[in-house]
Image (tube, rainbow, N blue to C red; front, side, top):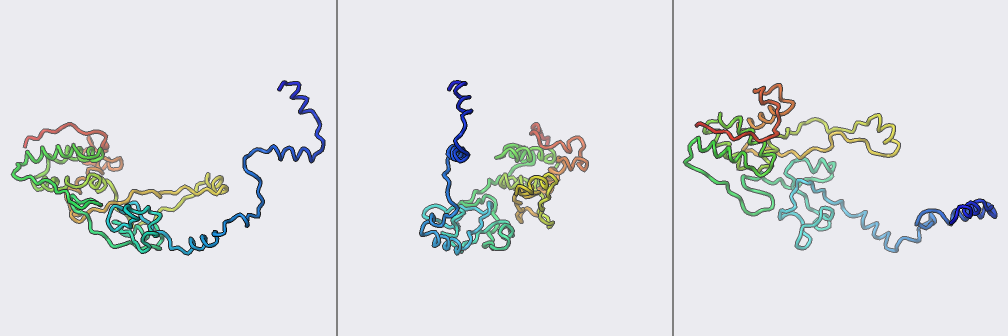
Length: 292
């Protein structure tokens, strides 16, 4: 459309204010049709029955992320395990057996109780498998051979985190260990890599109160008016992996935790060696050659 014609069209007077209102209403933006507020007749005939059925059902069980769904006691729907949101439909009396006591009660506010406590897994055992991976037993090795083999096993782990952790630990402590400590460290390396990493790096749970929300001044000015939740302080925390009874009083695990503390930023001033303390676990050290 040309510019003079467009100006002439906009300058044309409307017939009446009512015509202007109806024109704007007819040309309003949006794809939704105008509906009256009274929608009582639009619900299906089965809505009241379905609503009553849903409200009378028992709450669905809370299954924590640390509860394995590959075990035989988890409810099945046909050949496969049911999704977590349909556990109550398959087995309304199911109680998840979480390895961490009190976690289910904490997340459900005491509404749900935990199931039977499972025994701690032994060396070579995993959730969901029916066999046991037995570690290799070596006999007749001298101290020099044991040190060399443990150095290799400390550097060639399954994940990068345990590679850095155990290789730096072996570089500091392996040459100072006696035969009994070397044998204990040999058995310790048969454990799962993620278990070793969490046992050495995680702090034990404390009895302090759970961290609460701390509303900031910015949230009070903006979020409180818009209905936004306050920023949660300390809400996320990795699940604590308890140390099994076979390593509760282990000297090797104590040295490994001390190694982590010495190389952390907070443990720099308390580190025994100021040359290596507080440096972190950024790289794998060079291969060490043992004389004996």
